[in-house]
Image (cartoon, rainbow, N blue to C red; front, top):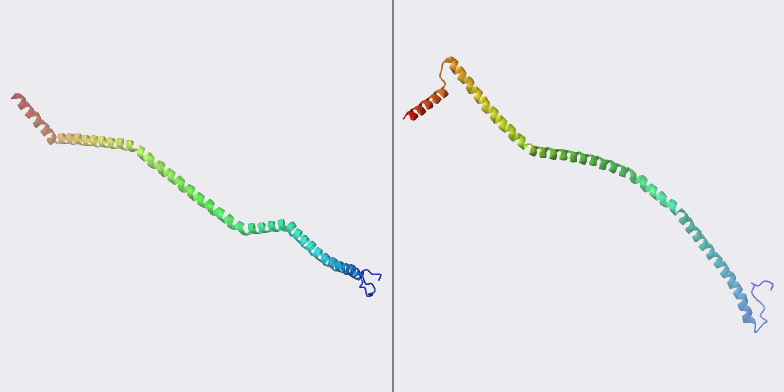
Length: 167
């Protein structure tokens, strides 16, 4: 009985038998409990170690995922950026054209006075041209010796006025 964990085979003790059995079984139970506890502690330590490893590598994994996302989506973003710039240039060109057209229309409204002056000058020019043509026709008629019908009408009117004055 040198080992504290061995079973008692001698049943000579009557009263202390229960206590002895309890002591010996409790040691066995402790040993089994210690082995089970060690096993559980190892499992917990492994899980903690694994969790720490995951937590320690989590930022690396996150950065990897970000890099992967950027690598996949960047070409599409660049293409969309070029499309947006192209559309912006078209819109800006259309805006400039619209502003120029608006300015031109406003200028046309302001030029109405100038068109009226031009119209009056054209009327005056046409009247002057008619007078010049009349004078040229009259000179041509005098050179040929044909009396001008307009001058005849004027002389007839003058004669009628003279007769009225005499009466």
